Length: 236
Ligand SMILES: Nc1ncnc2c1ncn2[C@@H]1O[C@H](COP(=O)(O)OP(=O)(O)O)[C@@H](O)[C@H]1O
Ligand SMILES: [Mg+2]
Figure 1 (cartoon, helix red, strand yellow):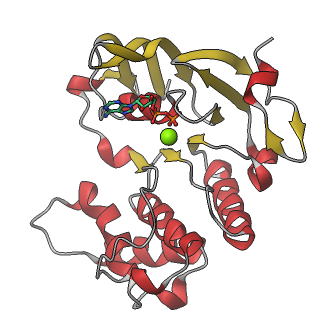
Figure 2 (cartoon, rainbow, N blue to C red):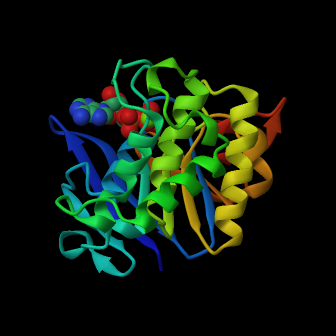
């Protein structure tokens, strides 16, 4: 399997925000992680990426326990955005090229393959013509696509995205859906956190609903109303 979280507990100041969560993701799945604000979605994703400390339980990536896992080039991770416009003076192409670092090693210069991967990733998210522009001049949705291109540039097998469509314009959402569709067609696995599924809905093979640090639903996507997800409707 691609990802296995077993009875994971994450506690901050003694308060569990992830309370014994188990989740197994197999190759080719597209899993949406849903739930209210503060329910623990980001913490679950961070725990899976080794970015939140486990108090108990275990995480395995591609069958290897987290502490021994070295295949980070097999994973593309896009964290939840903390406000837009951080003023980073990097160009679009530079940010996407960071996605090659895990493959390339820090001291080696970019190869032809690196440059091609960056160009292909930018093309996939519809930003090929913006490569030399500063990221700061792009819209929020375009900046989000830059981060997705960065994750794709590494040629991952698993994409993990935390609210990739939050605050993203409709055009960017559609482009992102197409991009994920291709990624999955070529055998990729996706785990993403979302509030509204929107154009991603047809891609999903499974929905996991988190509530107060626990998984309260794991299966078919929950009922929708005007395409807005009501996580609590799925807890029955
Ligand atoms: N680093 C942290 N330190 C303390 N509390 C945290 C930290 N990260 C998250 N929390 C708390 O854990 C709970 C779950 O947070 P989070 O996983 O970000 O929720 P979600 O992504 O579902 O909105 C929230 O109450 C949040 O305040
Ligand atoms: Mg979150």
